[in-house]
Image (tube, rainbow, N blue to C red; front, side, top):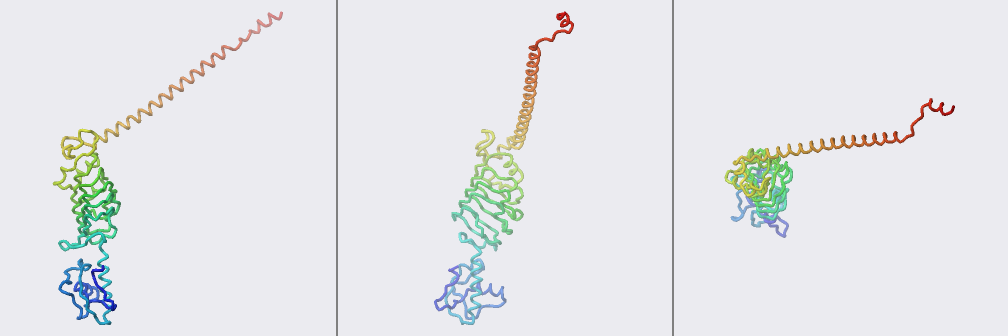
Length: 306
């Protein structure tokens, strides 16, 4: 904010630029003293350019110090609305926040709420957390291309799904993405040049999301359930009749069949062991009974005694 005013060592404020005069008129309904003016190089055309205004130093009466101080605070508040690593400007009358190639490792927290265009491309962002853009209700275009994004949370774009028109996720490190994160969007998606793992979730995104037709051919299978699909465009694989969702269903059915067969085999094995164990106990009991001395008949005992 140092470039918005230049203090004099006499502790008076310099004259304020015309943009601050206009902002003060909106807030209080009056203007600065007639003695204050902007130099030819200091005139700005919009509030978004307040932090860059250049002012000449003219001393104003002491009675206007409080009013000038109010304008200074207003100028500071405008300047603090833009992240320090970004540049805030206007594009077609809407606020644009430009954070390209700023070595960012995460999404800035202090992005202006009225941002319509947001460029975060060519950084080192690795993850899009939940509710990362929830406060940006006016956002229409979001550029996250050429980062190092590997993980996207399910609620990453919550709050901007309705108004977002363009979402660029191309040239990242995305292998898979939760379909819940994208299927609620009405935005045109760019997903090209990522190391995609071709699976059912990606197929559902391709079928139901609005993909940019110019980049859809660049969505290729970096890995896939079958080696023959690797390196081919996903659209070409699907056009050939491959259905990754049915493959997953068959895999699930096979897994359930193997599990049921395993349980059945365990029951059979238990029954066989139980029968064998009982048979062995019965045999031993019979042999024990045979080994006992036989009991004499009472008639034979009496005859022997006589």
